[in-house]
Length: 317
Image 1: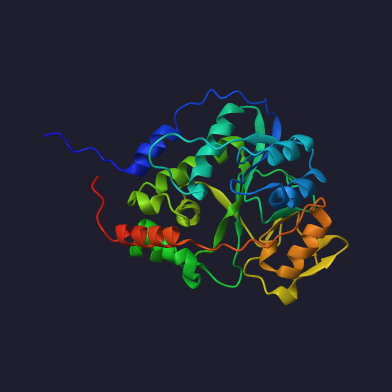
Image 2: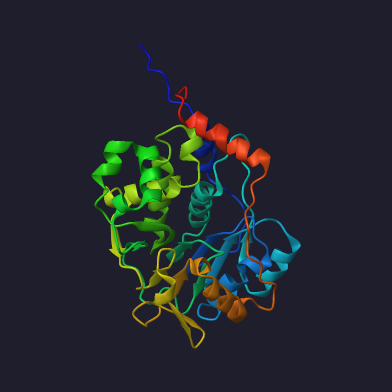
């Protein structure tokens, strides 16, 4: 008796996303920084690009929308602009789609060495990012005052992605952030594919949703599906989303950590308005600094409610 085959919108997208790509792109050798910045304009990504170019002259590629202002800005600073692939049919949220893009780019660049995959709008650089070079995959703690079980956002999506039992099994582990991950090329490809495969566990609306990336990253690291070194906060990378504002500072054009030192890479500086203003004044390139206020339309609110209901119903597979 033949077994029924698994089927879901997510699995269909994943099969399309993992097909070999023959897109013509400039060759890349050595270390490379990869970011996914759709939905942003030049002003949004200027601090990322300008601060990075002040400390790193290697390869940088950003997946961005096809906009004239972005094209001109990125060309000016030697950044490879890659447009997102639309593969037809259902597509996941950008936080999941980016792993397919990173996998595709690294597959096209066999001579890449160390790789940083990173958020874009809320990241700046204060020193050479790859000094020292990573020996394996580095995952960075984002919440040093607690563990996964203390972090409501992480637990919500861990439970949704893998169920209560698996979520509780790693609830005593550190919270690592999927927004910044560093590794040699081959290990990074394996990490991206592991995250995408873990997201195929549940129904499509969740596996491709915002938050699934964070859950899959923590599962991959803490269950040993990828070998990773968990690095403390405020080392190579400072992730500031949960850091008390009064413990942070701005000195000599750098964000300073609670211990008074500074990190090569700063993530989530925009969670602190004074730092966001200082960062843009230093690295905004004279472009207008606008606070991004996300107001959902009625259609967006309805869609979110519909997705919530669908997550509670079984998906035919």
